[in-house]
Length: 274
Image 1 (cartoon, rainbow, N blue to C red):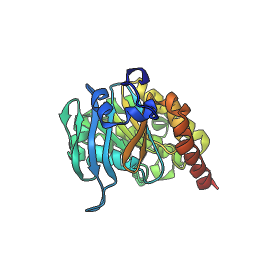
Image 2: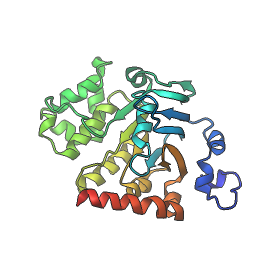
Image 3: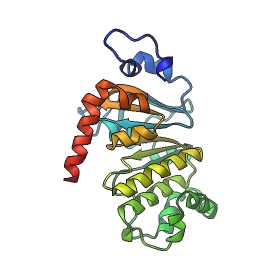
Image 4: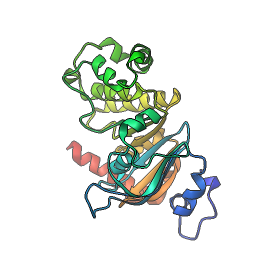
């Protein structure tokens, strides 16, 4: 992406330049999903997103990283209509979906996997996936087979209650349920959070397979380095705004991103483990 960015002012890296509103407007043309100048929050008078811009092209994996409180999860919730958008716009395939209710967004091709409370623990795996396609129940068998091809464990243990599964297995159930409606875009909120290193790697491998099957992915992650390794592009959010955006590889080696964010995020993850 760096090669397509306009000349960079002195002192500003290409990733900083790409995060400006002017470059966003130019680069986001024709995007599958885009958000422009979003202002949103949970309580009246308190804005978490403060003019946030974002875009996703068809076939991409886009990662969103940044310090705690930067607005990463809030951005996903604003895209999926779960919190009020006070100003700005969200469009999918050039159609406005700003603040549309979740069931409408699911019909239009968006899937969302929250970080916590993302399965029904008293229901079996099969029943959880049935909940994912309640809008088209006659298609359950076909979609279950399709999703099971990505997550074989779901078929093998389809009669096991979700409450009896490990954290990593629950994450697979949650992702599988979101895929039952064949979304064109999947929103993932910290899919590796709280998982063992083995299951973290498994989640990222599954994300690549889901993407290869034709689903564009937006992923919020605290495991910043791993996220940037697999994503096509990344955004660094800070205080509700874009700070940097570029390819995942470029962001991993951007001196400012490394100094200000990657070291800090790695440190915060180590503290949570300890």
